[in-house]
Image 1 (cartoon, rainbow, N blue to C red):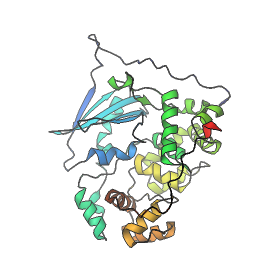
Image 2: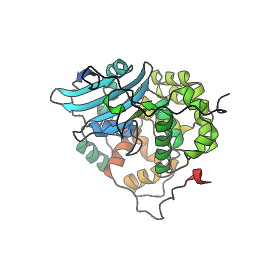
Image 3: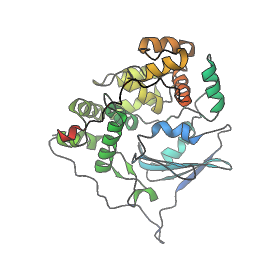
Image 4: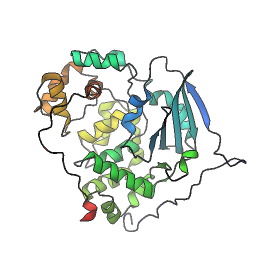
Length: 330
């Protein structure tokens, strides 16, 4: 019956539990001292899907807030720099799960010392970004679904689709961020994703190929989540068993869920040209050429790409930007 009837959209009435004085429930808290410089924006930035991502928010004090669906249930996590290190506050059934994995989320399992720059550009980029660490969320589906939505479309289109679907079928985030006009949301659970009918995907600007891939993935969500405990090669093979998930998508997921330092994205429209231009002055570089240039960084190729992107050195634009489509208008 999946897909024949639209799941009922989540209520927009905030359901945040409150204390007797009406304030948001007191969060569970953890203070983590990473023992090294840490730039929260660089570490957690890859988890954000556009400036209006309903599952991610940044604050004027430099804090970052994430709403996640953990194995223990929905949870909201706020992290910010503190004089003792990093202070984390968490709300909801998934609060303990999020706090327990806070060090890994902030890159505790990452080893930047394993990276040896072979180009002046990368050496300078690494020197300017001592707070860069590769995060590890321990969650596959929350990175897999938005990555599938990004297949073959512009980032603007994919972010718009993600925002529409999460707001309509997700649920308000636990804690104080789940209320108000600009409330945050936890993404839908696997069953809700599977029940979204074809016309709702169309309204969200998602074609049948991508929506079918999401439907196939959420039916085996539990097996896919096991990939977080595997080595990157085995984890990629597990993800790519799903028709519609190839090397590009699996790399985008494992960079976030597993903190895989060598998961280089192949099949991207722009990345080979950016890497080729930055390292060899060749903006027409293809995937094979990119992998050849990154060979000296085997084992750390994803970190090398992150450092290249942080330099802002990109080839001159030779054509107009790809137009943003709206298949929902068809």
